[in-house]
Amino acid sequence: MWSPHHGALALLLCVAGGCFVDYPPELSGPGGSAGGESTAAATTEAESHASDDGFEGCPSTDPPGIWYLDADGDDWGVEPGQVACDEPPGTSPARGDCDDDDPERFPGALEVCDGEDDDCDEIIDEFSPANDSCLGCSLSERDGAPHWFCKVDAIDWVGARAACVARGWTVELLSIHDEASYTWARKQAEALFDVADPIATFWIGLRRADPHWTGCEADVEQWQWSDGSPVDFAAWTMGQPDAANCDPMCSPQHALDDSCPRENCGHMLYTEGGWNDRACYAKGVGYACRAAAPP
Image (cartoon, rainbow, N blue to C red; front, side):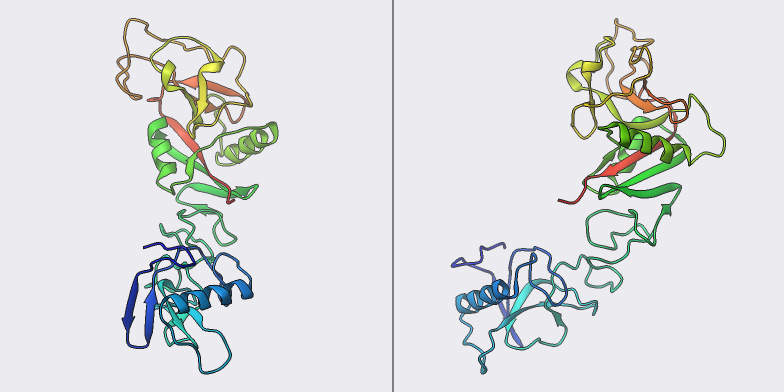
């Protein structure tokens, strides 16, 4: 149960060695205080909680601390916290461990290609100094945001987006908002392939917005990125989007409905340059993902 720092009800569990109390789950660093607070602020917090929880005080003049259970010994603990004068065995002053049974997983750990969230940022298998490729994807970081450029045998736009989202709740197909990012993304994608295909489908997050999904208009204003952001930078090739092969006599039932053709998804021509609209069920040779940059 979450509780504010001052004067609020907290969940109190008393066991041998001290009382555990449930506090907000902000991260803190080893030897530091929650959420990057100063030592003085952390001391005030501990004293406040100690007072609220009926803690009788320390025998010395030193204030009590808040300690978190650290079962795997990686110096990162988990909620709830324990108010005590001295650090109890098996605890840590840092909280935020995402797996207290695995000493290799903790905030700040190096991410590796193992299908796990090693650094506890809710993203799986992203770039780190120890992880620049993983399962057919080239990993990189730009402006603090993790990126994946992935080569596959065949994947449609819906499958590509699902593969991105599976890496973390902030991960989506790549959105591009300026010329420099576009040029950089093209180079990352091209580097995946030994033999370049000038018309190969390499999926990015371009999609026709929902209100226009069933239409046949070739209108650049009808497009958006899969993360919901607007298309505020455009690199469409000449004459695109063109809504080719659109049948106005039918309405698609879903994105992969090949019985009613619509070019409602966008891909990047990584060798020739530019974007093109394509049927979402077309088979691509790769895709790019981007996670939101940390605040």
